[in-house]
Amino acid sequence: MRTDTISILDGSTFVVSNRAGDIDAAPDQAHGLFFKDTRHLSRWILEVDGKAPDVLSTDDIEYYYAQFFLAPKTGTIYKNPYLSVIRRRLVGDGFVEDIAVLNHGGAPAEVSLRLRVSSDFADLFEVKDALEKKGTLYREMREEQIVLGYRREDFVRETRIATDAPAEIDPKLLEELKHKGIGKFVAFEVPVSLARQRYGGHFQAVESGLHETDDLRVLDFNGQRVFQLFRFDELGAPILQEQP
Image (tube, rainbow, N blue to C red; front, side, top):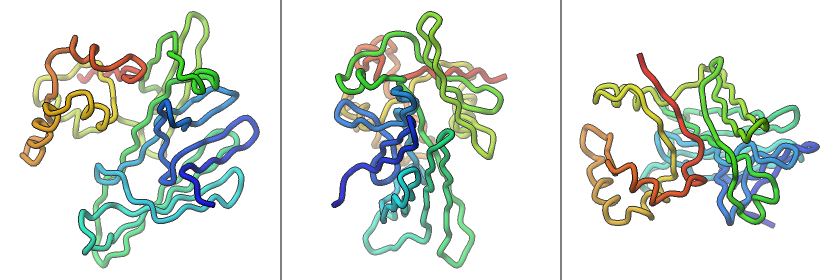
């Protein structure tokens, strides 16, 4: 029987995602990487060339191991994708994901892979009852790792994300911001669907200009209005960046 979620576990560690392998926690979606009753990842979303790939199939062959077979979107039903993506996921002593891209075409191809990650560090009761988290969430780069953390007085929990390449914030975005004179900033990441919902027609007007050469768009200059439209738990952990 098909379900909309895929779960794997080992001891007190378990992962719940959708059929693409993405984790996108919401009040009606108890997705996440959980360890000892605390959610250490509430968002783990893969984008291929800036878009979510289509699901071909899934294979949860062991209770602790799963595979997700995906294909990038082509934008039309008349063109078959020449690339495929395989996500191999394992839980045990931590959480490991291997991402392989296969080129089925006859020529070299360049592809961009991006993972959007965050954590709310909610415990199971907060997940179940959608309770607001007290304390402070933070995000920083440390020893070429992305560190997601939660602090409340002397209580600290952290998730460290390491890759086989140095972790970094999207260099294209940093370059565009620096070109506009923005080298030091505090940023929050929110889902595009949520921003579209909160800003309505204004979002559509800004989005319509993305076909232009400069694809960096300012949705709102008013920081106070941003905080009025989004709750702190929706904004997630701040991203601190300072360029030389």
